[in-house]
Picture 1: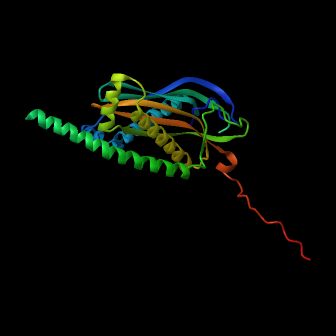
Picture 2: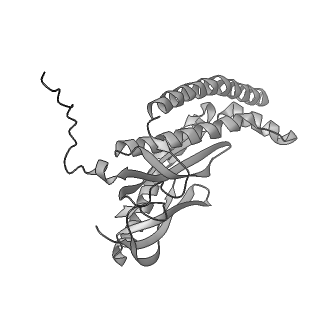
Picture 3: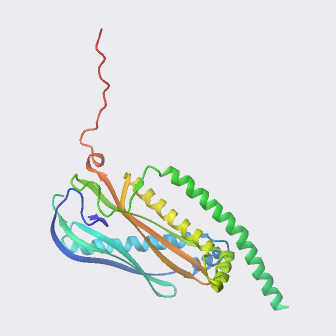
Length: 106
Length: 167
């Protein structure tokens, strides 16, 4: 599965469009990480726990988007975008969406 | 008495925030500059279309993310700034550090997978509420391109020096 945020893939032709596909996940913060982050807020710097959390969430959103594209029989997702929304304090939705297409060749 | 303890704690946190925050920021900037030199061979562009649309190239998504927190002192100063308005320098450096770090992680992701060119680079910024102090997340993503001949060389190119004619 080819995933890109370009509108075309160099040297490849789009032979079919399957429309928009999306994958999303809602994540909540961990209490322990939150306490640690509270301490880290005094001195500043990277909150590694949160970086990992966001990273995992994005990867999961991408995976779900790919799964949807595969179920349609697509072999690529073009023009991928991301959006993040906080639903409530401590919970956020991470969304990945793009256009599922069929490219020629393999 | 309780007020005095509270005030003491506040001053202590401000002092810790000021000194520790300055050290953390200085170290981070040093690390960013060092890695920016290291990853100088990975080129990143914001252009939407690849320079060459015809030659087949391997394309894939690469990304880098970082969550970074302000310190107690900076947040307090920014709070004061809110009264008068104007430039909030302490947050400017925070955002800059986060953006540069996210871009570095994107370059790391690209190079790890053998790419030297990333186009269509986009940034997403999210505020993460962790109580009183602001922390932000910067997510950088783009498409790495590898020319097919580099991606899967059918026959490894052998560079043979021109034969020296025997005299």
